Length: 348
Ligand SMILES: NC(=O)c1ccc[n+]([C@@H]2O[C@H](COP(=O)([O-])OP(=O)(O)OC[C@H]3O[C@@H](n4cnc5c(N)ncnc54)[C@H](OP(=O)(O)O)[C@@H]3O)[C@@H](O)[C@H]2O)c1
Image 1 (cartoon, rainbow, N blue to C red):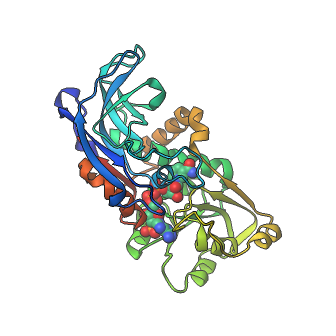
Image 2 (image 1 turned 180 degrees about the vertical axis):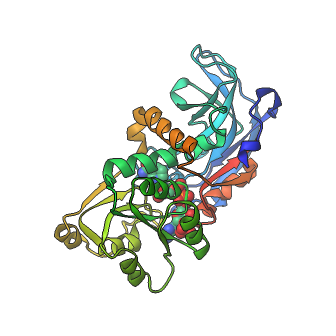
């Protein structure tokens, strides 16, 4: 799909104006279209030390909900009226920064907009369109794949023969976790929102079993799928699925807290079961993970993911929307579970 998009600078469409997706209202839950407005300005020009990126692939990340709110997050909230913070892949079309050359492809903090004037500090990774389709650098080679790999290895420390449970298993992060855990010889079980996703997880993404988290007999089905208990829980959702998983952990199991997409709101603080006894009695470890603590490891981790892609040991799926007009509704769609694999927007 996205690999058919042009990568030659001369073939790229360079609009004369800049459309930006502004955050205009602070969401108290999942961002909806009304929280954003698209505005059109003149195409900007870089000052000395800056460069201009033409964005082509806008990432849609569950994490953007946190960036848009001012409640309990690890980063500063996007100011109201500002361009929505987003990771993107784009091409440098004008440069007044000595270390950045025109025609270079980059993955970085360039926002939901056609063009971004940036400094080198906004760059997360270089992109080599000859090595892999540029879209993959916002997905399996970007935040989603890097999080899947580093969090699983660092905190999960999965060993061959162990059982690994993954929630949001059919999503951008989950599809990569499943495959890597399978490569390591684990028995991988997924939690997903539909039977269709469960089938895709089993057929394409390394899952021995995938369970629809909406089924009424989920507790029993999880017990049957994990007869020796769960050794590693890669948790993308929190809430009641975490409560249930904790009651099925094996002794000395590890819980990776990667995300909390099931929380409808973070304020007031969500309440639920008390799980201390599960953690104590089962001697569990429970650790949070934030990918941006690990930026210095991106080159090595990307090289590993690329090697697996080259060997055919990893595959990926992209859910690509067309045009910047799709950005304001994209997070609502992601949280509704419309996507299989990485959700992104092509604006070339
Ligand atoms: N900590 C970090 O550094 C870091 C970095 C990247 C991503 N993440 C986290 O990784 C997770 C996945 O992110 P992503 O961007 O790749 O999104 P994603 O998994 O592609 O999409 C989110 C998925 O969450 C599922 N979901 C939504 N509401 C749910 C609920 N109430 N219960 C269970 N599942 C629900 C939906 O799938 P179903 O249809 O299967 O329900 C949806 O497709 C998110 O929690 C994100 O915050 C964390």
